[in-house]
Image (cartoon, rainbow, N blue to C red; front, side):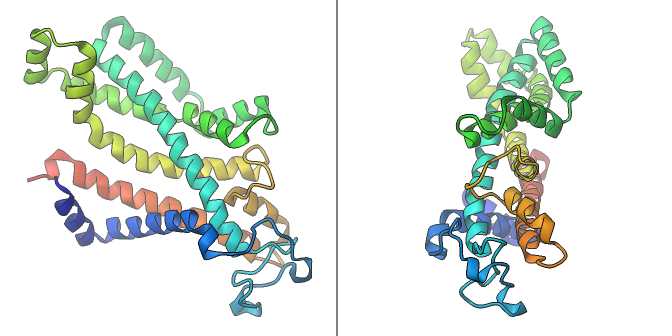
Length: 287
């Protein structure tokens, strides 16, 4: 399917279009945070602490209000999007690399290789994703080294199982196709067979999984940051903003409401986009 057909399909799909708009909006806010807001997200404005949003009696200087230290909520939301999306995208990139490699090897070689890798997958499946990430970060400690890099690695290593399972299952079917058997009979290099002939046939499922798993990793990062085990201050993330606002829910609802909405809309957009991609990339839907 070429780019023109994909775009027309997107414009005809309300679900895909809404998802794409939400995702693009999140990335535009993250990339343009410095341009859209001239206010430093870590700058204190103590005289304006806990100022409400503009429609609730606040001022246009702080359109979404301020937190308990007078920091601009709008600026913190946009700068927080950078970290949350970066962790989501790069964390899933690590998961994809690990999971796709293991899935391809298990599905292609079978035998004892498949048995060993399948038992590895089963072992990791027994441990919930967030529990594994929480345990690793709790042991290593959130204060050591570059915490964002650590978080990306931990979430990436914790989330490869879905990729491995799906790719393994599809690879088992692809290697039975006649043209793959023919290439193998001609003595083609195994690595080249995997990269040139098998991987393209499972790429559609990988793309869908990427969009869905980015949403999961964003939620996981927000959860860990909320618990104090993720990204540490003064770096801004949506999870930290939620943690800062939990003690002011009764009196200053905007502190936790806006980052909660940002997380919800971004993950919803990823899920809707993934749902549309699943339909578009399904070979049974192509004519």
